[in-house]
Amino acid sequence: MSNIHFKTATDYIRRAPFQALSAVFILSLTFFVATLVSILVYSSSKVINYFETRPQVIAFLKSDAKEEEVATLQHKFSQDIRIKDVKYVSREEALSIYKKATSDNPLLGELVSPSSFPASLEFSASDLSFAQEIIDEVKKEEIVDSVGFTAAIGGESSLKDVVGRLRTITSYVRIGGGVFTGILALTSFFVLLITISMRIATRREEVEILNLIGATKKFIRSPIILEALIYSVVGVILGWSLAFIGILYSAPGVVSYFGDIPVLPKDSLTLLTLFGIILVSELLLGVVLSLSGTFLAISRVKKMR
Image 1: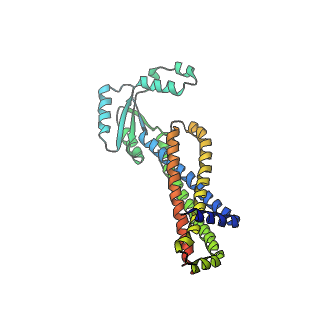
Image 2 (image 1 turned 30 degrees about the horizontal axis):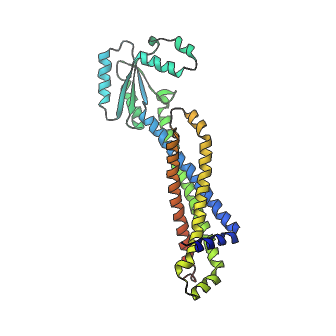
C-alpha cells in the first residue's frame, strides 16, 4: 500500500477520533486480558509439571530395615509403569536437607543428628492420578513405617484435595480465560465491523466519484483496510505492553513467593522470548480480526464495487 493510502487512512482516523479511540480501547482491553490469560496458562502448566516431575510420595522406613530389603523394595517399584523414579534418601541426606531448609536458624540444625531422621524412599509418579494408588500399595510393605504425600502437610489424607485443586484451578484458568478472551475478541470484531461500516457509509459520495473516474476496487478499499489494521496493531501493542509492564513489575515478588515453583521464567531471555511469542501470536490474531471485520463490512455495502 502506498503512502497516499496510509495518509488517507490517518485522515479518516483524525476525522472521527471518538470512533478510533473506542476501537483501540476495546482491542487494547482484549489483548491485555489475552496476554494475562496466556501467562496464567503458562504458569499453571508449569505448576502441574513441577509436581509431576518431583517426588509426590514419601515412604519413611523402619529403623531396623536392612539395606537388602530397601534395595529390593526400590527395585520392585522402579519396575512399575506408574512410577517414573524411586529415590533412596539416607538419614545423613535427610539431615542435610533439614539443615538447608532451616539455614535461616542454624541453631535448629545443631539440635538434631542423623538418628533423628528415618531413611526414606521418594516416589515420582508418572501421573498425579496414580499417587494415591502408590501410597496404598507402599504402606503394605513390612519395612515401611509410614507413607505421606510430599506436596501437602496434611499427608495422604489431603492428597485427593491437592491434586483435584491443582487440576480444577488449571481448568478454570484455561476455560474461563479462553471464554472471557473469546467474548472480548468477538466484541472487538463487532466494534471494528461497526466502525468500518460507519466509515464506508460516510464515504459513499467519495466512493461514487472514485468509481466514476475509474478508480480500482483495490484503490478504494486500501485506506479502509489499512485503517482497520492500524486499530488492531495499536490495540495489540498497547494491551500487550500494559500486561508486560505489570507482570515485569510484579515478577520479582511472584518468583520469590513461589520459591522453587517456576511460575515465571527466572532468566530475562526466557521471559522475553515468552512475551515475544505472545506478541507475535496476538498481532496475527489482530490482523485476522481487522481483515475479517473489514471485508464483512465492505461486503454489506452494495455501493462498494
